[in-house]
Length: 289
Ligand SMILES: [Zn+2]
Image 1 (cartoon, rainbow, N blue to C red):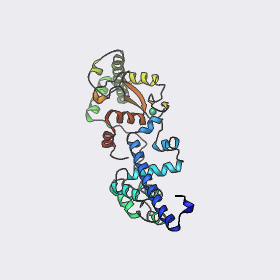
Image 2 (cartoon, protein in one colour):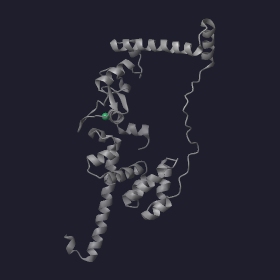
Image 3 (cartoon, rainbow, N blue to C red):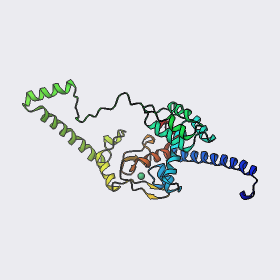
Image 4 (cartoon, rainbow, N blue to C red):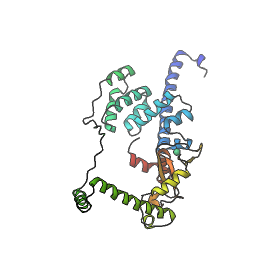
């Protein structure tokens, strides 16, 4: 029916119905975003974050994206919060207010989230801001800013250094330097063998990737992520790169070879994990979004 021709009564009933539909739709959009996040599907558009995907691919403004992703994260592990959003008792704005408050809290548990949300469910936004305006509590043990690295050595190391010093008359620090240099040479020699062909290091199954292989892969990748995404081609990320057992996962028998390994960004490494083991496995590891 044309809105302009509706009776007053019909218009007021109709708007209630449309608002309900709008809320239902928002809830469904948030469920989609949650699943896209779990599968790390945004990485197939070479987006670093779900927020970036919402802006670039879904056309939301930065603010709209932030509000939706924040609400999605809040409801991700809590049926209680999801119900509040679905019913319209928790608006996107209220979700962001609660999220800002929660980030300043030391307790990051779902229980704490639900406790905070329960205080503002169905409450006008101005009142919600007032309720959550109390200064956040400080962490009990602030991290110490230790600038001086300290090396703890065992009694056995001290005894060996003393013995060597007595025999050679050399300084203990110098003796330690020589010992470490010799060990380094030994490891580099093994790595060289590893890259030249099968060796005891490779045949004995280990997650350890020789530095020489790492160097070759970094060079092959031109120091950027080697993932080629479904929708946006090769990723260009050059920060936080990791080595990924691409062709065959390590736990499925994949080796530390040039052919099996690739250099990837954190997002594409996680995406590969989802492809190999499913998003449920990822959920078990992260336990939270
Ligand atoms: Zn990447």
